[in-house]
Length: 244
Image 1 (cartoon, rainbow, N blue to C red):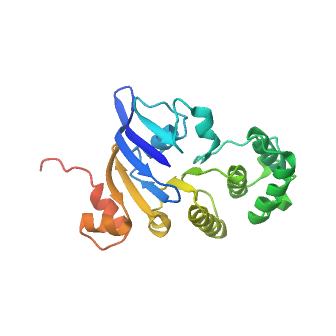
Image 2: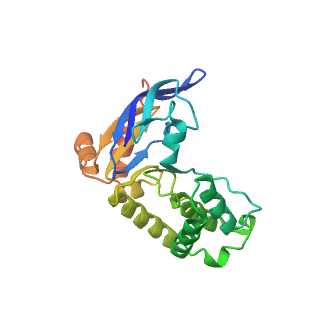
Image 3: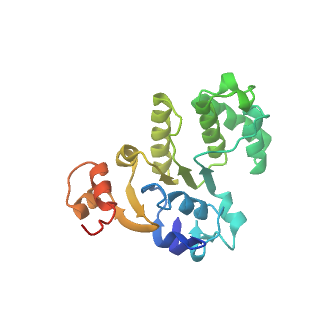
């Protein structure tokens, strides 16, 4: 579903992503982890077409993101770490606006609003301006709106920022359910316990390079540790020691 070949991105002299090759199949819940500045967010912006690669290629559901951007983006859902919402719209208006962008019929939008607003506890806030919503409610709204067009591929950059424990459980269960239903989920996170809990496979990026890839058990074998993901992550990403 996601095919990445020899992907690189440079910002002047800085190489943010280095020769990344990766395949994520349909129905996989894939977690991409790494230290700050490792290239996670740059990678996700490349995959969603928000940045253009310096070299390499990306195919989403068989479509080249550079050459068939509109068709590729039709099957993509993207939740950034700091999503932008229109403050002067109500929650319901923003949901409807999102549906109109995807050319979803009004009757379908109405039905889907019932479903998603019910799931995320948004009904009592449907007529509230977004500027008056808490951060957690904004996050719930962006999730509801992103799922509206039933994307085949979902990209999430830091999925649990600002969410309370109940919302965290809801999102984790929903991501698992969507992956089991065939959606490809590609998420980045600093919360290693989240990756350990829900990922089918984990990729570790450091200094722009993919340095480890596999299931949690496969990563443990590679690092020769049976500890938590945090232990092997710190071992694999340990900075090179200088002399002395």
